[in-house]
Amino acid sequence: MSKFQIDIDFSNIDLASLETEEDFQREAKILLPKVLVKLGESVGEKTWEELQQKMQASGAKLKSSPTEKRKFMQETGRTYQRNASNREKQELEEYIVDQLRQYKL
Image 1 (cartoon, rainbow, N blue to C red):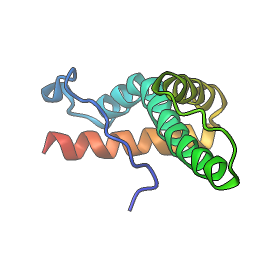
Image 2: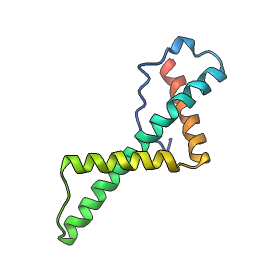
Image 3: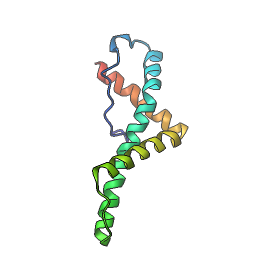
Image 4: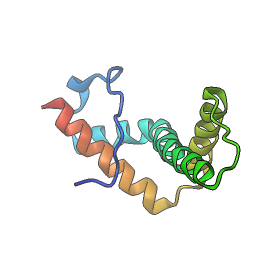
């Protein structure tokens, strides 16, 4: 099972044009920045929920407005995109290629 648990939007991809390994890798490189942000936002959402639970358990005031949550998730996504290691990027690229292959079937 993959450690990445995100849905990738392939609706704008011409799957018929993906024939060679290079085609799949090129498309994965194009998708990588957006997928990094999306993965970071997913991590941010989980972190937000955990922080809210901890604050509630300790009796602290909750910051639970949808706007604040969205801002937190967006910032976490951008930070993850900027700070992802080369290894993480490579693993995610391989995951995107695998998902492209499955989607094309």
